[in-house]
Image (cartoon, rainbow, N blue to C red; front, top):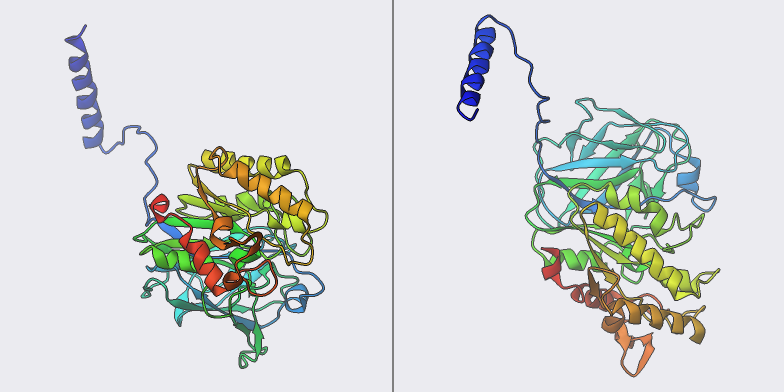
Amino acid sequence: MRHGRPVARRGILTAAAGLAVAGQVAPTAHAAPARGPAWAASWATAQTAPTAADPLASEGLTDVTHRAVVRLSAGGRPRLRYGHAFGTRPVLVGPVTADGHRVTFGGSAQAWLAAGASLTSDPVRGLRKADGTDLTVDTHLPGPTGPLSFHRNTHATHYVSDPGGGPFRTRTNSVFLLTGVDVAGPSGPTVAVLGDSIAEGVGTPDNANLRWPDRLADRVRGAAVANLGISGNRLLLDDARFGPGGQARFDRDVLALPGLRTLLVHLGINDLQQPPSQTDPARILAGYRQLVLRAHDAGLRVIGGTITPFEGWIRWTPELDAVRQEINRVLRTGRVFDALADFDAALRDPQHPSRLLPDHDNGDGLHPNSTGHAALAAAVDTRLLQ
C-alpha cells in the first residue's frame, strides 16, 4: 500500500499533463485573491447625524466643494474613505483631489456613496506623504445632497466653496462624508482610539494638532493612529447630538478600519456626568468587557484608560466621583483590559485627587489643556503598541 500511492499519483499527474497538452484545463481549487498593499488608517474620524443646530450638514450642499485639511499620523501612498452612516439617500461624490492629485474610484472621477454605506477610492497616483504632514482633500458635491453624515468638530479649520466653483469663503470645523485617509504599508503600529471629547481634542487650540492621540502618534515613529473621539459620546447610551454610544458604533467605527492591531478605549466620563447619570459601576464595567470580547474576536489587543477627575465641572458630585473611583479601582486590578493607561493618575492633583492638576486643566474642570493632553499621551506605554 505504501509503495502503490506514488505510482497512482504519477499516473494522475501524467494524465493531467496530457490534458494540458491537448489544450484542456484540469479542474483546480479556487485561486487565492490577489494581495494588494497592507492599508492602515493614518487619519480617521467618526460620524454623527446632523441636528437642526448644524445647518450646513442638516440642509445639505449643492454644487460646492468641501475642502478638508487633515493631519496624517503615518506617511505613505494614500487612499480616501467616505461614509454616509446616517444618510437616507445616495450622494454623488466627485471630482476629488488630494493635494491637487486626481482621485478616482474604480478609475472614474465620480462615484455614488450609498446611504448607510462607505466608499473607498483607488490609491492616489503620484502622491506619497511623510509622517505627520497635512493632506488637503477637495471633494466636489454636485448635490443636492440632502442631510449629510459628518463629524461636527475636528478642532481644525476646513472650508466650503461658493456654489459653481467659487472661492472658499465658508469656514467650518466640520468634515462632511470624509471618514478616513489610509496609507499603504506604514512603518509603525496601527492604533484606534475610541473616545469622547477628550480624545477629540477639546481643550487644545484648533489647527495645532495637540490632541493626545496626535501626541501619541508623535511618540512612535510611523504609527498610524485613528482618532475616533466624539464630543459628548458615552459608552452605554446613544444621544441625538453626540451620536451612538461606544458599544453601538464599535463595529462601524472600529472594526471597519483597515490594518488595525490595537484599540485604546477611553470612554465613561460622560456616562457619569451627563443626564441620565449611570451610578452603577458594574454597568460600565460590563460595557467595557463587551468591547474587549468583540475586539478579541477580531484579533485586537485592547488598552483601557481610567476615567479622569472632573470636580469643578458643573455636574460633578461626590456620589458620581465615588462611582468613578470604584471603576478605576477595578480597572487597575488588570482583569478588564489587556493593559491599562492610567489617565487618572496622569492628570489628577495629588493634593486633591478628584480634581485635575491646575497645570493640566483648561479651566472647566473636565477637559485637559495642551499640557494635559501631552500627559495623557505619555501615560500610554508605547511598547504595548508594537
